[in-house]
Length: 427
Image 1 (spheres, rainbow, N blue to C red):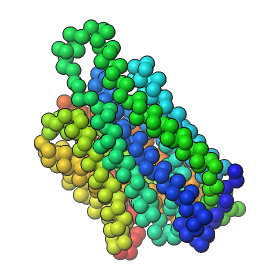
Image 2: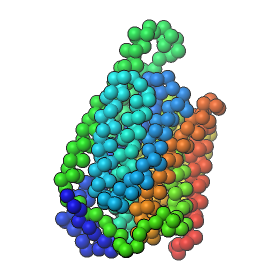
Image 3: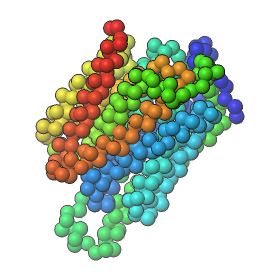
Image 4: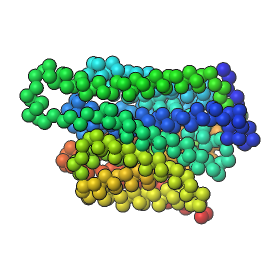
């Protein structure tokens, strides 16, 4: 089924103003929810699999690494396929990989192999790479360029909704709150230990199997739905990595997004460990607070979209980065429930960072927009590389709080990016 081709400057017939394309636009917006949903199950998987397989903080951080290394590996192939075959093809490939990877959680749980879980997560993340490479620029192009950041923040708000629902309602279904002491583990026979591990692993099967089936059904809906494609302004001018990388905005955007995603993953993935360690609450209770973390992330997206009507996005990004620098210091030095509430506050002020950095990075790229999008999506590899650093610091110092110096440094980099951007903006 051939997609309808639109041009970037075709505002009257764009999806944002045409009822004909309203349903496809809703479908694309739903993708933000679904990849947010599966991403926000990762902070649940980390403590769950850490317990089931007796992992260190560094070993459990490989869950994040297996997810975000896929972004680095697949971003350029995803961009190439979409430049050659259009956004719809990229979305369909992404949904198929997403659905298949989710279903593979069932054999991974049956075989009780940690590496199989990592493999299934890698396949899911390959699919998410295609989806994010398509959906983010798709939203920014559909309408006036001056409101692109607001549109992307609005669409990403559904990602925030998923960040609340996944841990708050699915997390308690996965986490059992049953923790074995060293003495209990040693007292178990091999059969008893196998039964315990099998029970822990089995709790992930139904949530991921259900998610996989839903995603594959959505892929079928996408396949049979006529979808518009976006064609850049100058068809005769070939896209070029060399030309794209001449953009200072893009280069800074790649660096800033690397550190932002690393910070977001660090804060979210180790939230339950921080909550149980500093406040002494149970894992299931911590999962509920993680739901609040996601809720405030979502509220931050909607609030940020509103504030951008009055405050320039770059200025708001700088303000939020500075606030999170202060909050990170509190998270490192605080104790008790203060730390938990501080992490929730960090979520609120992180909320606008990804879409704002993304739209700033690809601003003005024209025919190189898909290339720029791929490069910024590649920078999501920060979510693979920075969490192990946090885990290593935690293991070496014996304190998970010390590891939060990693997001602290990341917010400093984001503040510098926003400050550099503000130098070119008349406020």
